[in-house]
Structure formats: structure tokens, C-alpha cells
Image (spheres, rainbow, N blue to C red):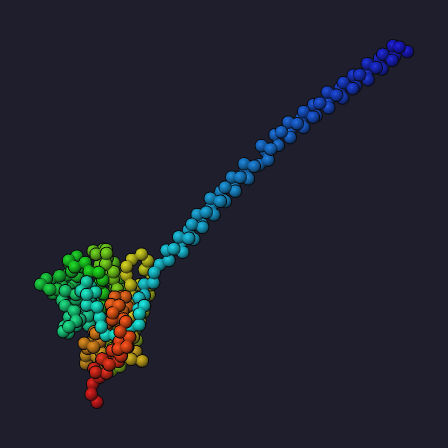
Length: 305
């Protein structure tokens, strides 16, 4: 019995020992697994996409802010002040050059308006051929590019088209104006270029129909509106020279239904003064009489019945 008990006791001890060491191994494996779990919990792999997301969204916010801050200015000039006076700023006009055809040329033909220093225009001038001519400006004979280089004015006013509308398509006309404007800015980078609409014609004038003039003006305006980053603008002057039906006012007609009277040029220069925000404060404050200036002057130009 003693021998058998000893064997039983030895066998039981062996089983308990095996179970003990087997249990310790499992605990050790569990401990290692749990200790490795934190580094392999994809903390890094999740963090990288999160960082990437932040770096992608931040520039979008900056881009939106930049877009908001740099909205392009309107290329169509709209007067900030009401046009109520026929006074015009001669000091401002001193540093300008009007470029164009016979309608433009008359700016220095009439007394008390501009001088040859301020006008580079000729009878056959057009957007398609303006570089073919030279201009008598003060004591000089200049091409347009030479005049731009010599004077470098504050503003170039491009005012032409009556010799284009029956010779070229409206898109060609607009593109020619753009090319001239860009050329002037390449010579005189500190300048601005303002493209003036063609003036209207009288109801009896047949050669240059008002409908066609309006189409070409619209093409020039649309071209200006598409420009970005260049000092090129559009100013519509038709309304200040036309009646309710869009025809040239009788007092603005020189006699042929297309060329303009001195009153028309006075209206033009005074309107440009206001549109370019160059009206003198003292003049704009004369509200008692200023509003009557235009109607009074217009009435005095009406032909006697």
C-alpha cells in the first residue's frame, strides 16, 4: 500500500507541476500580447491621414480668403457722382491723350477745349489702322507709339470706330482696341486706358446706323469686362449725347448727323470729369445752380424756331 501511495503521490505531483508551468506560459503570452497591443493599435496610421486632412483643408481656407480679398474691379466705369454741371477739370485733362478719328480730332479744333498736345487723331483714323498715321502734337510729328513714349499720360482715351464699323466685324474692332490699349500700357505702364463708346448719330444720318454703332459698342464693352489685371476700362458716353430714342441730340449735331458740335464736346469733357472722379469738391458742392447748368446751356444751344 505504501508503494502504491507513493506512486500515486508522485503522479499527482507531476500533473500539478505540468499544469503549473503550462499556466505560467499562457499568462506570459497574454502579457506580451497585451503589452504589444498599444503600439500596434494603428495610432500612427490613423494620425497620418488626420494630419494630411488638416494640411489639405488649411490651404483651401486660405485660397477662399484670398479669392474674397482679390475680387477683380469692374471694368465699366460708372460715375460715383451725379453729372449736374458742364464744368470740367482742365488740370486733369492736361495729363491725358485722346486717340481716334475725325470725331475725336475736333477736341482741339474748337476753341477753349483741348490742345494738340492732348489729341492724337486724324480723319481716317480707326482701330484697324491708327498706327499708319502720324500726328501733329505741339511742335512734334509723332506716331502713336512715339507720342505715348514722349508724354506717358495719366490716361489714354481711345475714341474711334466710325471708320471701322463698315470695314471690319465687331469682334475684330474690339480686339483691335484691346491690342492698342495693351500696347499703350506696355510703353507707359503707369497709365490707364479708357475706351470710350462711339457717339450716336442723328435720325436722318444713313451711313453709320445707330443700331450698328450700338452693336460695336457692346462688343467693346464685353471685351473690357473680360480683361483681368490690366488698367483698361470702358466708359459709355452715348446717353449724354442722345435723346430718348437714342439719336444724337440736335444741339450736339454739327450739321451732318455724325460729327459733333462744341456743346457735345463740353458735355463729353464734363461727364468724363465726373466719371473719372476728378470733379473738384468746390464744384460738386454748388448744388443750387449746378443742377441747372446742363439744361440752361442746352437750351441756349437750341436753334431758333
